[in-house]
Image (cartoon, rainbow over all chains, first blue to last red):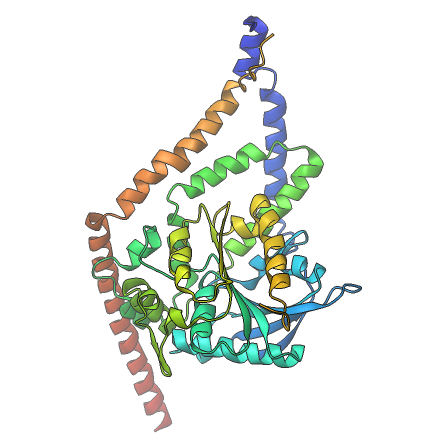
Length: 370
Length: 74
């Protein structure tokens, strides 16, 4: 039997919790404001690394191996060209790089950098070739003929195009929320395919497409995302002191990454919009490089396709539909809980993602039987 | 004794519902609006025209800079 008296009425009205909750939230908001105003550095990209090779703005990083751990296969991480690499190494405890190093993998990362003069006029194919040269450098450093290649977002699209044209050094390909078919229901797909939208004109006017144009566009992809995020932050600020510090650190690290965009190289942008989004050339097999057509049917290496169930940038179908065409019987598709970034840095996603990556590479060891 | 979970205080429930409303129906409505051709077509026409004008101005200013440099060299 439920009791319904004055005390229950007061509890329901929030009379017992309102004041302590308001004080805790005010404290949380003040702490966040202080940290932001003081520009307290955020501990992003904690894994130690050295630069192996530079090409234009791009750098190939080699992360230091974890001492005392038996070595495992090398892996190259290829992020999206329009975001920073450190989403895969966000902070201690929330880092794909750290998880892989702890498992003994030799980890290399491609940092595409801020495009400059050297990137003017470099097409999608040009960047795929650049990735290929960076793979050569990683293979030489690891003294191996093959390695695993993980492509995140557009990095996965480029890695797939490379695997379709020249897969000699790729043992397995891991596509993490990588768009392969671009005609989907997402807003990004609809915007880039809007009638009269002229990517050539944008590149002619602006050169490399700057973050002040792309960042708001990405934010409006989830139109109510910003007000909802503000409310969720307000809701979470009433945590106890110890928990609050850790929460705010993660929040600031993530915000730093989200707002640390790079420009999209001019010709790459034209190809991305014109060939990939508007013509869906990769999925239709109509994308052509100098060496011939880029056909997904020619991807012969085992491919592990990972999509995020609530991804609004790369809807799951965009990542998984075309993956069915890969010919290797060892190919695998998995849809993990979370959004485009949540699957990498969110609690539920990363609990499943990291072990899945390590298990995949263990199953397809270099020198082992695939 | 009832096993039913007591309802949360009203302000917390309202906050939860507000977030749910924003992320659910309000977001879907805004998405539908932002993906409709009626909205997208004029926006993309305006943007493309503005970019073409900007490209022309950029080209013109570059040509002026080149002329100035050439004159200085002479």
